[in-house]
Length: 371
Image (cartoon, rainbow, N blue to C red; front, top):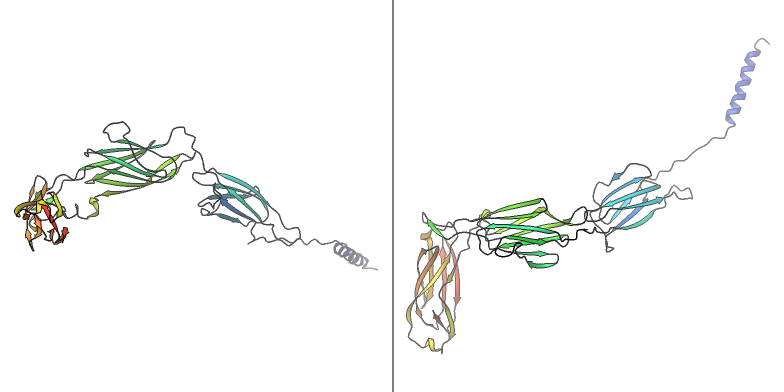
């Protein structure tokens, strides 16, 4: 056979094909665990209640740590398939917690994970300081009787002067985190009323209130305020000690000059003493005599003097009082019968188009005696 070598090649190829076809093949199925909950983590506080705003980090096996994109309220869910989960929890004012959870694949080959549910209770940090944490409050004002009152998680308290005596240095103990309110009264406010170019004016007196804790401080500059209400949050620092968050500080002065609201408020009050008694009283049996009844008006800054009128109602009609500025006060006088027996009585003020009745006694069964 001249082509015997061709026959040998063909026999070899057939044998090789038979040898390859005889080997068993291995088909490995890879499971897809996407969307399956591997770990459900319930986050609690020290009282066993759901914890909020917790920073959560985790890693699977020896992988890198990853952080959930947002702070977690109450429950975190992980869906990364089977393996060992290391989970770390952090929240300001609480000690960090770490838990390890092993998640296995179901033994029935169903490509399912055995979901694990665990609960972790976070414990608040305890401040190691022996001395109470305090917030220093320093007041600079021309006011002679500054009073500082605080409302804390422990209740309401009036602060005593840190140096004793009539000073303007105070200390507020911070027992624990929470919301705090500080009220400072007796500030310089405004000076005596004056008249400039026919307008009522008041000089604004400056005051300062400074809050300091350790090396952090904030100063408020106030103008014309009689008092100020401060609100701030106290959080816990890295070791659990109360720390005043001065960035959260809000101030509400009274009056608030920057608001543009008129101050002081329009009003009128009687200066004389007034006795209201029965018609049969001895003071009411005398013949009524003309008597000057004096009123003091409270006028907002910027009020034109020539647009202010005060009236007293007696003997059935409104009587105009004579008014004028005197030693920082706006005083008015109306002449009324004294005693005023069995007659309605009232007084009112009209200023720059605004009207307010100061008092009204429409009694016809009583006697009014001015003194």
